[in-house]
Image 1 (spheres, one colour):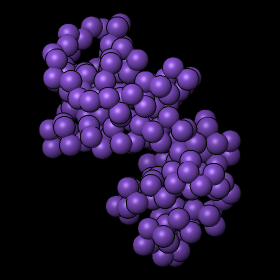
Image 2 (cartoon, helix red, strand yellow):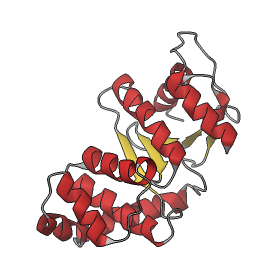
Image 3 (tube, helix red, strand yellow):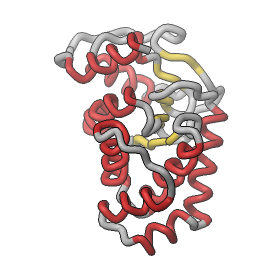
Image 4 (cartoon, helix red, strand yellow):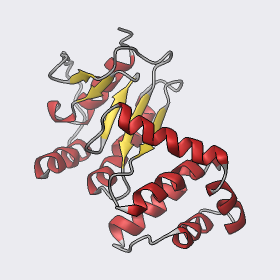
Length: 202
């Protein structure tokens, strides 16, 4: 785990490299599904309780700026960290996505858990976070209880099971390729690897 953390920290701090790299199946990425999505996409599995995911967040923002604008980066919270609160925070993310305040809510949750070291202990704390993000308690509570958000959260759980996610952060590209982040040396190589995989159609 310390090795993984050091890599992620290095990915953020090391200068960008322009050196071209050849990528290989089984080394830089693994095939975890037999078919690709209809359109290129990047899916990040993470947990608010994962300090490595918190450190990895700036890279995701850099990646978002580097990929073609029509390639989405979707976030998928996992339930297996945080004990009972993992599932509640998955629903919180789903509600934030539906209300178009994902960045604000995610930043606030990460800040409270990872920087302030203060726990989130239930719906009241979640509603307070949404209020800080500009969403009233009534609107946030309605979203959290809506069928749409329950459906989105259920899909996140299914995605975690489908791709057999056991550790985070994990990146799946085009619904088929799992990125081996330990196989690259710096930020630019990881961007190049993900970009390469978005262009793979078989």
